[in-house]
Image (tube, rainbow, N blue to C red; front, side):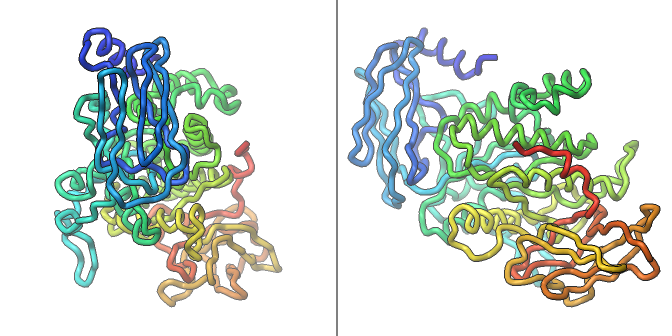
Length: 483
């Protein structure tokens, strides 16, 4: 299926003799270009036309092909707070893009919890003593933090070259809160301009964010029944075509992803893990960089078990968390936990998006930029060793040590007996591992932790990040092939 943008351009160029030189919407005033990378500049002109691009002393040329498309790359740039201009010329047509910065650029995508707009913060009523950024939109005045909101029906090229904005009111009010707080934290630590692009649609599954071919490359989907394949073809590509493909090949540092509620309602498990693999691999391929970081968010605790006419239990969401966590086997991925950030599990859209954004920034600062000694995520189950009637549990991402976040005994640990029935267990930190024991269980078989939709467990690392829920008899992880 041809991109609607291409169709638009064919008609546009055929009918107008006054707009031979056209740029994609993502290239515009106020944008941030990725430092240290070959930066793509592209567009459309008359077939065979020479296009000249000048920026910061660089002078580049390209020739439009038979369809009028042209593309060139600027040499890697150094971060700069100086507002500069890009000059583009083709024949008698000229474009001047102003207020251009060079720094770090990230793309955030997903469904409603990523789309959650900054303006909603002003309506919140913080609990007594809470430090909630309810006035952030009104007070924000950082002109070197730039935002681009991908609006599905407004990605056609136009002569205004608009779309990028400084992260101030009123544009900031409509922008992703997760994306903004991520960018704000990143800039404070890196001391460079930051640009963040938000492409998110409430209620969207993962499938519309990639074409069917991305999933059908996987043997897993080709070996499923015909109904599943048919559903993939029906659901795929809708938002990718209009909201992601139109950004390629704009140079990025990485991706942020907050999505899954829709697929959790469908009770997907291993199927979702493979869909994440398909999405990650496809996006990386299209951006021609198989190492681009992909940092994503554990879907927030929610009372799925209380949904009407649905066969969910309190364990349905933890099973989906397990499917999300399995994707960590894919290179250069991190998943942040949200189990401690929820005020009310009855709310599918928890308001605390600032900590989500800051945790994603911590992942980037630690894992991508290597400038932060903090672990990239909370403690992640690594191994379990059975010793008598106890299990000794070890973790990755322990930071400077495991701890009880509230000083109380560790909570939400359970041990299964020979019949697979789970019983509440005692757990304690010893030698920076967790020792788990259930009284009266002579032959324990497995351990699970925080294994219910509303669990608010207290096992953290010393840096303040919660451990991710897990069960030691995780069969899904063994069924997933990340390669």
